[in-house]
Length: 583
Image (cartoon, rainbow, N blue to C red; front, top):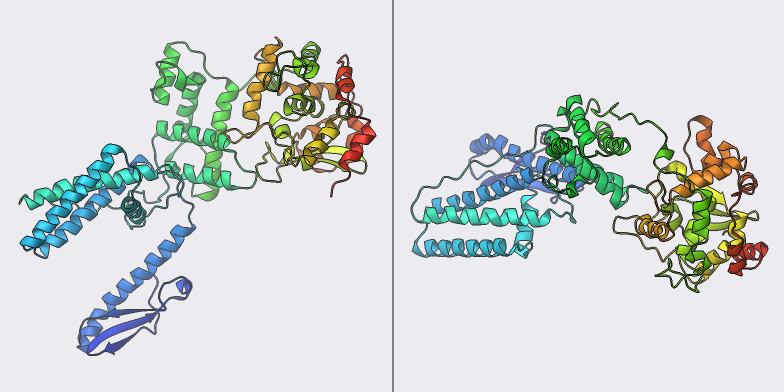
């Protein structure tokens, strides 16, 4: 508590002594008054001096409360309230209503006041029960009461305006109102009903329950430029919460290696999508893991176990950086995986690539909607046509391709290239090393890619593939993944080792077989590397050098002549003339 400024002084208003003090310098610009005055309620000077220390202490507490309010405004808002916090708020509001009622009765009530009080109690209970019964999540009075109770010193929480916990908070207010009305009616009937002690803050001494910090972590990671998509945020939040639920919610510094090992042990027995398996879906995570082991169900892959452990490890790394946490209990906890990443996804074989480029999309389909059925339409003005071809000749991930803007296809020094970036709204990349420039391969030019890009620009499209909107999970690739999987099924080559990501492996193999040096392959694919190699994807290789290497790229045995013949797009020089140079 800060000391009152030394020039605090007494003064008289009429015969009564008051004291006056200026606002401390650190809160002067935000405090609602220019000075604090407080009546000492006596005309006797000696009595005024005796009462002064207590009055000063009260004013100092006002200053401290203002400082706490300012600090609360700077804190990130909670995305959700825990069940414990909601129960605490209900108990605080219940205490408030009974304390208010007791103070009113102690002042004495005549018959008219007593009747009015009971009418008010009946009305409050009727409204509370009506709202509870109908699940009414909003009312002007409930909203104002909920917002106010969050600011009380025994609650002191800041809740995000878009939080899904607001309806639960209103319900806590409604429940407390009905409980208090019942107790007040007992008082009116002459039964002694004690007002409970005021509930104190339910936060631990350090105030940092793991459950409270998860929301702050997710909010910070999602808010940053190029931060998490909603799907990434949801996955990280889900597994961090599952760990806290399994290990119990405690101050963040109380967890140890044994908690992390227990979580890992459960993961090793847990099947993928266990919440959708009958008999497991309603069990807690550790119980589901035990039951799955008893039923000999196939557990999730080691890769996915490590992915989940990585989510929770990232949370603890953030907590270490932002709070007083000594160590990360998940450090060193990984599952050893034999084999290579290729064992998860393989490149396309030559036969599979040939089947893709000879599918109805490229030889004639029924319509955009029915592009896997033979017909007369070649949809060369649509993403279903171009996205696989761009993947084949760039090695880009599907999300990187589908989020491309028309302005990301550029010309510099006579070299056409695609800029893969997260510098823009709704753009995201796997990591910073994924930012790169990829020269447009001569085959894409022959097929008509540059003319397509210019057409999209002239039509006013900001995105190169506006026919693929962002999915509900915040990614552009989710819906397309299903579409591409359906294509593989339709042409009879689908199996669990291939997906759109197989283009990335195919591109890497083709680069190797075309004798393109590994450093250039990494620069084109956006692979992060250690040491100097880690800088190649950030512009150390100029476009001219990258273009020279890209021109070496061939897919031996893959016949694409029908694409160039059917495109009717003019010469490569004409196409590059369409785009001009970047501004």
